[in-house]
Image 1 (tube, rainbow, N blue to C red):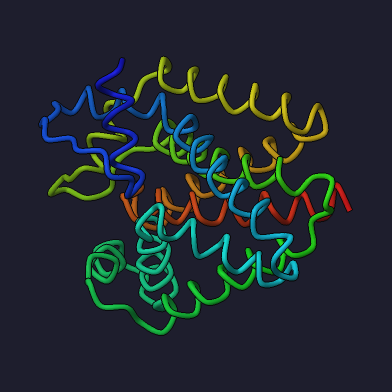
Image 2: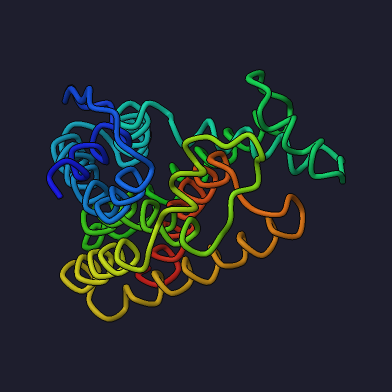
Length: 248
């Protein structure tokens, strides 16, 4: 358990925690149980930063700095998946192999760049609008929900690429055990920070993630690691929108 949590921490963050051990696919998948808990840690860091920055800067400036901090803490890992997914699915290509080829291309296209810009703007605007009473709780939960969505999408889906990859280990080996751990963590964190109202946001994210699964299955016969990153980032933005609508 400690090994899988250690792997999750080093896989999802840029925190200076060395990890040199090579894990078999089933142990890589086991680390998904701890993804929302890593999200709690990320959320605590950015909420603390926001609390410290708020007396010094206006809310819009603090919001931009917090969004930038989260990018630094994650190395933009999931943003890369967002850009690749936008390029692949919005490229006007219909054949699965063409979409997968574009997603694998390391260069960023117009749709990927637009996706990144719009998502970051949306996060900034939403954080700037959430009420002072709820902002710290929402900042803690935002990374939790994004990483819970990764686990849910992996659990629901099959892997699309024939050549395999790290995403295949995550998708094909994840079990109900990891899904249960991730769900309990997300629900407990929600109840502690936002109460029963927050569960509505979690439910919306779950339905949205299921929708991604269905759409990806129709377009490319499964998901990829890029789609997991896309799901994480868009679920974070969706959670922020939900809190703006619900708590304001």
